[in-house]
Image (tube, rainbow, N blue to C red; front, side, top):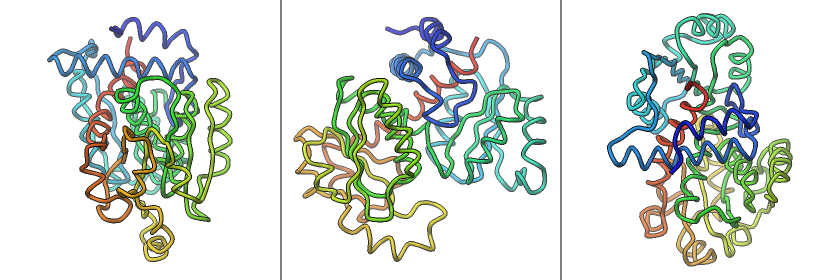
Length: 322
């Protein structure tokens, strides 16, 4: 079983990042260490123990420009379990970039807290925070990436399928979750097939990054507009909402474009019989995924949601521990 001390030693010897804004901040070894520690932390927590607790009173700033269930609860619970405290700050509290410049907020928070975790509209906000912050900054979601979610996604796949290279299918919108999932899956050696409607493919620069990361391990990325082609013989099928926060004005058009991309029982039959289904939640039941699939025997969605807790604890312990 991985101990925290073993993981920290491996982490420090593998060119670890100071901040975690993108999957591209990881390399193959740091990604493996973070996931290995997350598995060990989950086993420990389930047995009523903790592998890591902060040695002295510790506080982190939790900046939320966007609301969340899973991100907020798993961060606050995780910090509590590790003996730390999260200071929850909404846009109404600090009006980042309006009431006060981002650079000034970063300088202030660096004097008070050990780390900043930010869920923001613009990735550029995170980049400015890191330029002026003296403490680690973690991306809890931006319009470009959701790297904390991706760690939970791949942890869930490892729990259900092991570490061998797999065919993983993404069906739906090529959004921020798709970006981080594809990058991390490729980095870990998987073959990712992404099916989106025309005009909704992932960002081309992100796909290029994913392919470069995949060169470390043999991971590959394929794009298509045919969901049946992407799902055929897949080991896992992943989807997300068709209308993410910030795109509500496009809802009517998106609903027309995405109808053929619903993950339903018919589509799932094309995957391997033991394929698992993933969804980062919240789900629009009856839109991108049916009740029968979301609640069915092949769904790993609730494990995936739980694993946000364990992967974020591992990440915080590695970035902030001593």
